[in-house]
Image 1 (cartoon, one colour):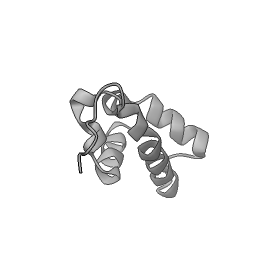
Image 2 (cartoon, helix red, strand yellow):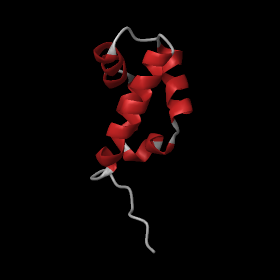
Image 3 (cartoon, helix red, strand yellow):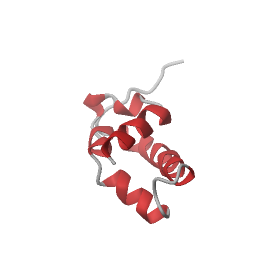
Length: 74
């Protein structure tokens, strides 16, 4: 069975789940006051800029690694 190839044209399909999990982690750990704040933190971060670029391979990272990257910024 062939695995679909991740390209710049389809990497965006992986982002909603990662962003939702990351926002949840920010809320659970008290890093964000509400969901809007958590999403703003994510979408305006350099982490998200890297996540949406296929060539960085950040889409491959798990939530723990992405959370730590965000924590290092805030």
